[in-house]
Amino acid sequence: MGFREPLVLIGLGLVPLAVLAYVAAQQRRRRYAVRYTNVDILASVAKASPLRHLPALLALLAFAALLVALARPERTVAAKREEATVIMVTDTSGSMLAKDVLPDRLTAAREAATTLAKQVPEDFRIGLIKFGSHAEQVVEPTTDRGRLQLALNTLKVAGGTAMGDGLKLGLQAAQTPIPDGLGGTRKLPSAIVLLSDGASTRGDDPIDIAQQAKKAKIRVYTVALGTPDGTLESTRPDGTTRTEKVPPDTLTLQEIARDTGGRYFNAPDADQLEAVYSGLATRFATVQEKQEMTATFAGGGLVLLLGGLAFSLLRGGRLP
Image (tube, rainbow, N blue to C red; front, top):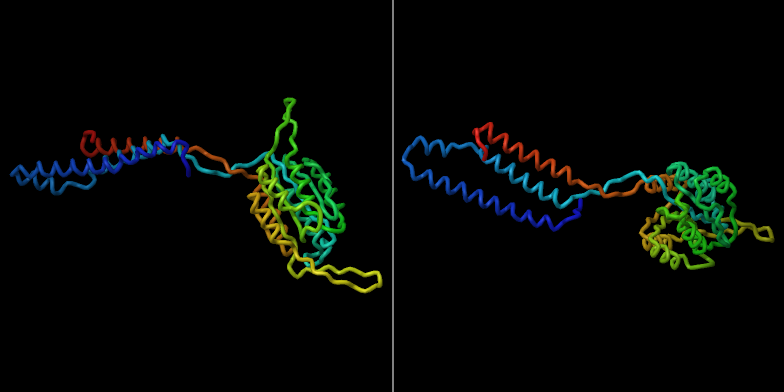
């Protein structure tokens, strides 16, 4: 919980002073009672119920609650986001045919992307970038899920890993404004989901592009697909089989997520990848908003004050 006017809380320093003043007043009353020799009066003072202090306590709590209300307290709550742009930047390098993620890495990535597209609100604009030997925008940010699904189904592997180039195209797509309906344009909240299964081998340095995303305040959520022992088999011209290790570059992906304020995920299998994309869909569909709680504290303070007054009248027929 935070406060819009925190300086008002300095007034809470009066609370302990009020307590001390009340205690001093009670001690003076006891000293005044001792001056009398009437035993009955002294006995009644000695047996006074502790409940006599309740009205004062409630009044003190009411004062504190009203001070907090004046400080305009607020809390952070999750609210449903209606519009946003999500750019999926997906690796389509040759290593995406590795079968350590069943049935293969590319198929698992395609199915997880379909899950994300289905679970985010329908007004979310989703774009698709692929990168292999070179990067290409397959689908510009759109709400047309049919086009997106068709594009996902046609993804094919191609050569090396131009991760930086893919991330650069993703950043450009995430910053693309949309018409505002009034003749102008506006930008939607944006995020990038970068999935890769290997180290960048050509093109721009992805860390440099991550710094640009940081300046643009666009978070990049990275997913390392595959296992450290993943291998890819290929056939040489002479007919022999070649086996090559293709582990994901987890360190680079972790640094990209950390630098941009996103989050890094490790997906060693298809089920884990599906869970990651499903969780991202939920994350993107909500936004953290500040909700003011002034009325809550003001109402609580008023209830405490009225409670103290009512108790005092019922018990002694007078106000404290």
